[in-house]
Image (tube, rainbow, N blue to C red; front, side):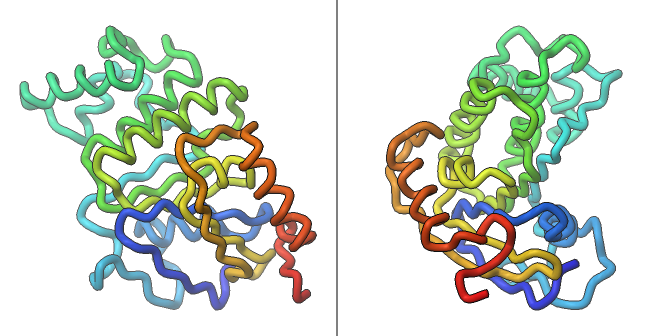
Length: 229
């Protein structure tokens, strides 16, 4: 359940949304994407009604079509023109999937499937990218690699990103700004800028320091409680 939740994000800003299970993080993204219209309130992007014309969405699971090849999965959003095929081949190479275009999702590892899903979300050069715990259940090295790929892709076109995660360390690694949600009904209880240089890695001392600092100053933060509660 979401109630009295309000925030803005600047063009090109990378915002991580952190909150306890059941706070409504996925529901929030679904409302922004226009997948859930059963709510009262207003959501706008650059002064216009949501969703924007170019919207990317990376879900908790890759959601690739198993009967289509990697290239065909990407063509679903980009189209089948010959120049698009060349672009797909180039982008697959950039994310470490050269020579994988003719493979089917079932032939790929979990991390490789996530790379394809990440590329699918970026390939239309979205104005807004929504990511719903997209790297959950991955082993630490694979998740670290995907965060690096995400940052490289984001740097190319700088879409506004709303990145939902249950991991505060991951949020600190990727985001310019952290929004913490309360427990149900969800509202923003803390808004924090992350002024750390990139690249960031989850074991970096500066990441660990900010993580510890936030939890020391706000002990109930990850349970959805503000320091004023």
